[in-house]
Length: 172
Image (cartoon, rainbow, N blue to C red):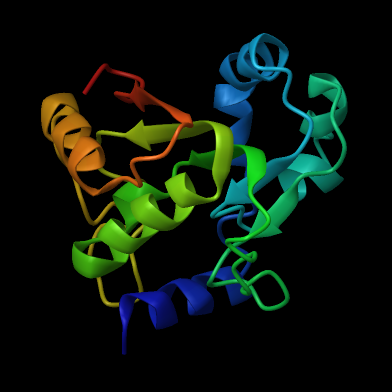
């Protein structure tokens, strides 16, 4: 069973609704205003409840973002590369990936951003475990390692890339 299969199973069980985007909401709102953002792709959106329930996009003053999550049926088709978005947000996603999946996610998110790409990354173990017993945060790197990795594998276009880190409640 692949990691993606494990995440599909967890989504089917009601895990990962998308609420973790809320902790980054103020950062995102500032970037939307600063860069005059109109269109957003939420890359790794979960089920999108951050918009259907929390209405974050309304707080930000933008239309409903396009949602993409490879583990959620109906949201698992990656948007066409020829139709970039003003902003791509990717919150609490990258640490759930590893290896080539992680490289592809960074590249695919950044290539779809016309103006700005925002990554919110947790640097501590998750509370959830995968069905195979591993911690759901498969990649736990220091901030420096994350920054070098993203710089190395991102699409080298015109969009600005911003990375913010969540060290957990105790600062880990």
